[in-house]
Image (tube, rainbow, N blue to C red; front, side):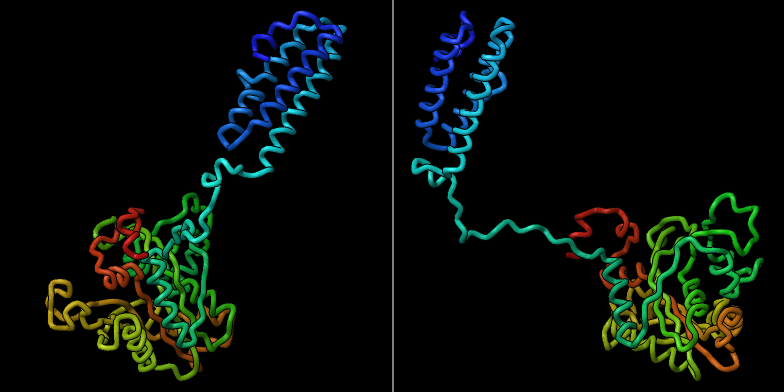
Length: 367
């Protein structure tokens, strides 16, 4: 039965409707019996259920054209026809591929499957984990703390009293609208991970051995070696009879673990408000072996981190909540290093901004 015949049904009495729907059902069964593959099945679906030119769509027009007394009869027969067509489609689909097109549906299970790309650690994250793992092997635990800190934990408890000149060396990003708070309660983005040292000592009596990896913020102008956002790993060791020799031995071992057993370390006097005595640590140039090159400015040495013995004034702040930190009975050392600086050395990167640009051509080298 052609679509034109369907569209021009002129009589809606029971006899005419029975004949018309019987012819449609017979045609649907004949079309379904002739299916021989996916292409013919799709053609059957479009021919019968297509939204624009499908036969069922055309038959539905009979409901509009039928007189009111015949609409129920047309609707019941139309539903039966629709159920028949859908049943024929489901039966054809569930019967699987036919002999006429076995190759089109066959799957070669011996072929390798589709492999999803696996991500890799960002070079900063990778370097940070390497540093932490070195100290974890020495028995250090990992500490974390908030990036938004109070002035007290970021500065005052670290022996940076208000007005101390050393505050000027850490260009600080402060939270707006803090004027009504007392200075020690004002919020800022931490300039170092040192506040976690104080928070740890307030919660835990000695002995303490902890490394603190994390993101820090300073109002630095971005250039080849500086960024307003960077990462640090700081460490703190507190116990009885901790000496500067323990500090030197710990950092010498850590530098050899990170850069190779041939690397050498040396210490120079320095100043940090929270340590006394303080030192800068240099390592022999890993690029020239200490002979002198452009990267070490012909000196054979590269300055890498700062350290020192914990100042008794810092222990005095901790003792306010944890009396066990009596500087007359305990001692300790602290150190801190920039993760980006170490990553730039390990991977030969000259521009710190490449870490943050999100360029997959750059990051893909570290997969």
